[in-house]
Structure formats: structure tokens, C-alpha cells
Image (cartoon, rainbow, N blue to C red; front, top):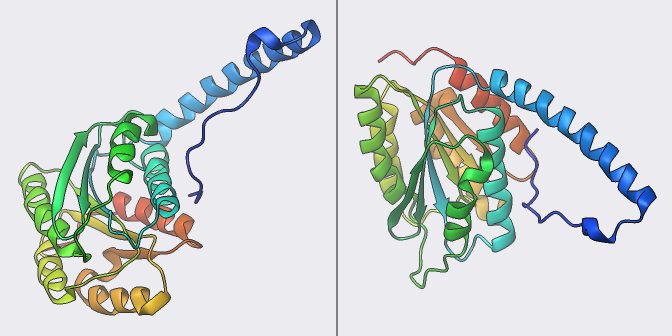
Length: 239
């Protein structure tokens, strides 16, 4: 299930401070953990089978998305990598505000592989004003088209509160994306209902993407993760 929780450092006493009885308990716990990790690794490898996907991630770095929300949104990306993306899938990450900047094109084996890039993006505090998802979509049109020419499906994950200073341009770029049959899903994750962000986003983009569009907020991210899984497993949309 998708958890809206930030990555945290693991706390605990240092091994050198354990008493003998504590040491025995710790060794037993480590043995149990090793067994669980082995079983988890087996399940992990089988749960992520299937045709690899290019996941294009756009991260809203404007001032309206605070650090706590950024951490929570990237936590959903981490779970997408851990639970949904087939092994060998690419993850491409852009930040966006008034411009889009590409940070990485990785093939993560585990979510931790993304953490340095995620931390770099989360630390951004642009001085320019305005949120323009269209600048990320414009970059993604080229990438999704290239993926289709290589026979690779793609999906988009937009980590944003849903604010859009130029919805008309977003709609124009969305229509270009929707024409690419290998695009499996477009997920807007973290969208708020304040100021009508969520309802307006759904109203504008649902007629364009149809059932390929996923819009979730804080309470239904787990549902979004499940819908993404089903869309990635479904046949490509006919042209």
C-alpha cells in the first residue's frame, strides 16, 4: 500500500552499548531479519516481472508544495519503484516550475537508488513565480514518442498539488501525449482540493486521457498505486 510517510533515518542504540542479554536478542533478531529479507527479495523479484516501462516523473518544486509534501510525494514514487515497476524499467526525473529541468535517467533496482536525486530535487527553492506543468509535459512528449519508436511503453507520474498557471497550454501538450498509444498512464499524485485544483484538473484532462488518467490526493494514494499497476499490465490503447 502507498504510504504518505517520509523516509526516516533508522534510530537505535549502537551495537557496542548492548548488554550480553541484549546482544543475544539482537543476534536472534538479525537472523530473523535476514530470513525476512531473503523471502522479501524473492517476492520482490517476482512481483516486478513484466515488460519494462519508462516512468517519467515531474516534480513540482514551487513554493506551494512544502518540504513535507515533497517528501510524501517522493515516498509514493519509492513505493511505485518497489511494488509496481517491472525490473529494468527506467525512471526519468524532472523538476518543474516555470521551466523544466531534467535531473536523472536511472534504472533503479530499489527505491534507495533514487534517493540522492530525490534529495537534490526536494532541496530546490526557485525564486521565480508560477506553476506550469506544461513545461514538463512538453519534455515528456519527446521522450514518450522516442519510447514508442523503440517499442517501450511509458507512464507519467506528476508529483504536484495541482496548481496550474496556464491550463490551456497544459491541455495542448496533454493532447499530444494522448495521441501516443504506448503511453499507459498519467498519474497526478498529491493533488489538493483547495481552490478547486483537483476538480479542475480532472475536468480538463479526463476527456483527453480517459481511463489512463489517475488523480489522487493524500487520502487515496494507495488507490492510485493499484490503478497504475492495472494500467501498466493492460494492453496498449489502440491508435
